Amino acid sequence: MEKNKPLGLIHILQKVQNEYGYISEDAIEQISKRFNISQSKIFSVASFYSQFKFTKPPKHSIKVCLGTACHVRGGDEIFNELKRDLNIDKDNVTPDYKFGLDHVACFGCCALGPVVVINNKVHGRMTPQEAKKVIMKL
Image 1 (cartoon, one colour):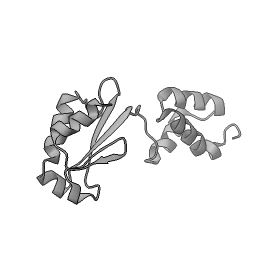
Image 2: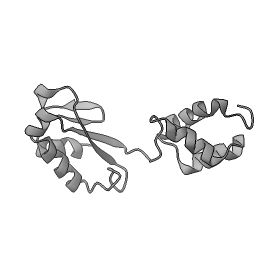
Image 3: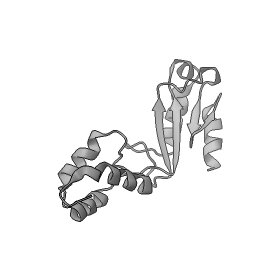
Image 4: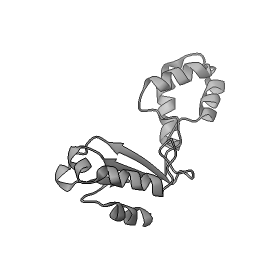
């Protein structure tokens, strides 16, 4: 990428995110210096695309389905208990970034509800206690 030309900026941002899992303020500053692009321009481009993240990802990802079938079978109870037990903060991660907790509208596994996906592995017919057992093994 030539200086002052943001043609390859998206590619650079993708490489940074693939390497570190997110785009840090430090990375934006270094890209800015290296390619003589303002930090606001870099942030503007990166924030336009939903693929780019600006917060450090957790080591383990936990997603609880709160779709109708999972909700009526206790999905919200699983989510709330995990949030409390793991001490999840406002950014949906533990203070040490070991666990991240999110909820989704539906995984499409309604017959297995309630469903919890941990590190991209589907766990069906979960209870709060079973979810905690799986997480404690991590």
